[in-house]
Image 1 (cartoon, rainbow, N blue to C red):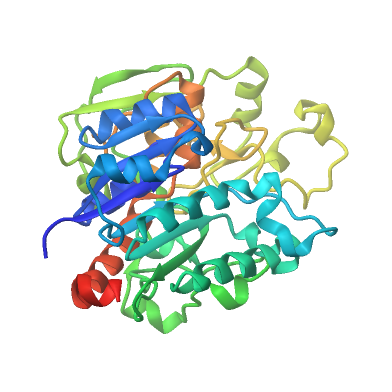
Image 2 (spheres, rainbow, N blue to C red; image 1 turned 90 degrees about the vertical axis):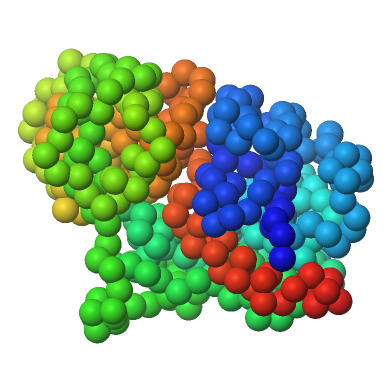
Length: 397
């Protein structure tokens, strides 16, 4: 049926677009406010018209005309518009709240392009905004435009990502039948948040016999060269490694060099703290006199991931936008350092050919903000099947 085309709003470094590209989609246009993220997107998606600037300054009609598309011709709009506010004084005007205006700008593109399908992603915490009114409003806005919409909480580990990361995913189509993908890998989903018990796929022990095992941290990064804290290089050879996992082999395809394998320098006090933390441990393993002052009064049940050192045969915690031990589990299992940018990218399932621009802090931010590539690819494959089965005429009907 020809190429399947998308546009990507709030695109960041391009994790969603990369997953859709791997599934056979072509991204025509993207937009983001972060300059370094746009440079990363342009470097890795050279055929996309990638724009930088506030989305409120983008004119959907002008974009559509420049792309040479008629209304209804675009296959999919992708994006993660942030929704952060809710006012008890105007519950019926949620999307007029300036903190939620990004979704209104997303809808401007939906109205102009009338895409056959669309995807919206966000954090699961959106479910609790305004007691669920934000999500209800989004569903109503899409229904009013003729879209059949569903939302699910998806666990990245269920799709081969070595990370305990949840995302709220809305899928919508002008024709019925678009569903979320089913898990391909087994991992128990501990979704202890609003909506987690009802919107997340719950696997049973017997499912482990039919699904692939979860991808571990060992699978993801154990083949990468050893570096020191504050060391590494933006470009370096892989070096020799006796064993490479199936996961690592897939991410290595397409490149002979390793990029962005650099780590943050650690202060002497953090290096000393790290010396006391075993794999699988965290701040509670640090001697009291070495703890940060703000944590000396903390209960041992609090801040459980701070100063965390992950174990090889576990999943990574959610990759953060800052590789800072004070905020999460960022220490390498057996090297005296925090994760490198490339290791964080591996945990987010970015292929090794995917290069990140900007300084190291910006690179970590781009990686941490991204949707895991393999999660995006699983969604894309489902949407591709739906589009191919339904055909252009039925989706536009």
